[in-house]
Amino acid sequence: MSTSTKPHHMGRKISRIRELKDMKQEALAQAMGTNQQAISIMENSETIEEDKLIEVASALGVSVEAIKNFSEEGVFNYFNTFTENKGPIYAGHHCTFHPLDKLMESVEENRKLYERLLKSEQDKIEYLEKLLKAK
Image (tube, rainbow, N blue to C red; front, side, top):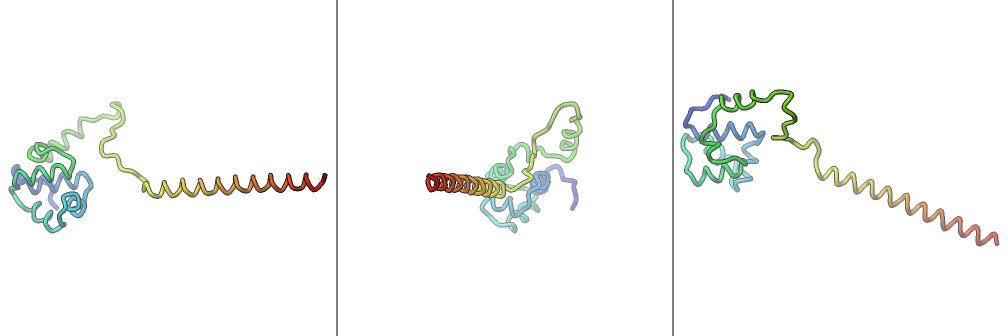
């Protein structure tokens, strides 16, 4: 796939922004309430209607102007302005775990804690029963 975009080819600009955001056509289609084939057709179109462009921009999380003014050179120039001593960059952060996995881990930890508490209470009851029998 070519990384160059014609200055006015809206479909290619959308395609490159989508790729830079690490988004597949299927994900964009789902965000827009359409199918992957419609996204493919749109990305091959040189022009896109303004209302569709607004919808795409919203789904991609960018402004319409960002799509219209997108250029490969601009992206490279933007990222080349960062240096190591300017601090952390948080844009584009991706979770390295699935939130449901973390939830299930906490549920499992809570279950283990509950079982330990229950065992402790049972041990107390057994101890008290032994004391009562001894008297």
